[in-house]
Length: 310
Image (cartoon, rainbow, N blue to C red; front, side, top):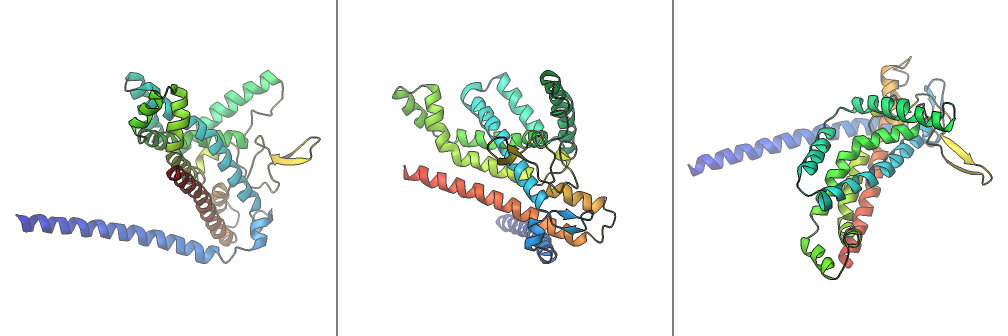
C-alpha cells in the first residue's frame, strides 16, 4: 500500500513538473521570437518618431505615449475606488446579506468578457454620461465622444475586481490585536483604518496595482470603441492657457500599442510590409508592461521595508 502511494505521488509530481516545463518552454519561445524579431526594428527613431505612410514607416511614439497615459489614468481611477470598496467590505459590511451580495457581484464582474466592458463603456460613459454632461454644460459634443477619459474609466471597471480582492486580502492580513491596541488607546474607527490598517496593508494594495497594470495595459477590446484611434500622429496633449504648460488631454483620442498591433495584423493594407513593425510593437508593449510592473514592485518593496523598520 505504501509503495502504491509513493508511486502515485511520483507520477503526480512528474506530471506537474512536465506541465510546468511545457508552460515555461512556451513562454520562453514566445519571448525569444519577439526579442529576436522585434529587436531588429527597435531604434531610437522607431521609439521617438510618429508613424508615416499608413504605418508602413516611421515610429510608434504616439502609441507608447497613449499606452502609458491611459494606464496611469486607469490606475488613478481604479485604485481609490477599489481600496474604498475593500475597506467597506472588511471593516464595515461584516458578513451580512449585503456584503455577500457585493462579493458575489465582484466575483461575477471578474468573469465578464472584456468586449462586454467595451460595449458598456460606449453605452454608459459616452452615450449616457458624456452626452448628458454636454447637454447640461452646453458644450456641444465635447464629452459625448470617444476619449482617453472614457477608455481609462472602462479599463478601471475591468480591473476593479483585481484591486478589490487583493486589497481585501491585505486588510484581512492585518492582525486583529493591532486594531484592538489602537482602540484601547482611544483611537476612532477612522484613525484605526488610516493609521494602522492601511499603512500595514499598503504592500498588498500595491500588489493589486501591479496586477491591474498587467491586466489593463494589454487589453484591446475595452478601448476599441471608447477612445482609441489607429492613425493619430499627434499626441493627446493640451497647453494650459497663460502658463504654457503642456498636459495630457483626457478628452482627446489616442493611439495605443495593443490596438495598434491588432489593426496592423488584421486590417492593414499590406500586412507583410508591416510585419517587422508588428514584432517591434509587441516587443515594446511587453517591455513597457514589464517596466510599469517593475516600478510598482519597487514601490511595494520600499514600503514593506519601511514598515519593517518601524
